Length: 156
Image 1 (cartoon, helix red, strand yellow):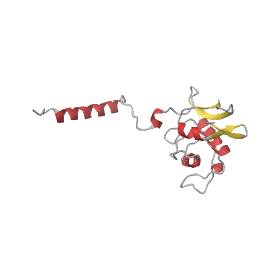
Image 2 (spheres, one colour):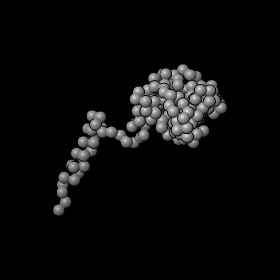
Image 3 (cartoon, rainbow, N blue to C red):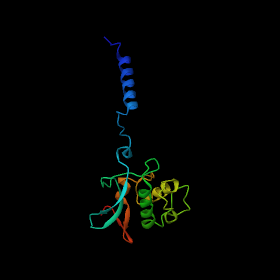
């Protein structure tokens, strides 16, 4: 005998899922950036080769963090990222629609606007990371960072 509660049960489950999502109790796992904290400061990090490099980090010092247009960090962190991109990737072209500009021409204004996003995408393409315009752990692992007057990789 088929239960007549099937459609009602499915509707109830759907309503419960919507209620959880609206109340903030549901956690999205759709994107890695949703689970990764924002970068909140710039620190000196010692890589596996013993090089001291300047990288974005969380307030607890974790270098696993994100910066992006919708993942806004403070101006000091964005300016630090901009300085690093300019120092380590000056000849890389920005992504479209700014493809006639170079990373070296990027303003160090601390604002993660469309040109900074295009610079991150250009560097991501250059280092063979997914060019999504978000600085995060995947990009960090492939990038070089300022180490005095030179640039050294995060991963060695």
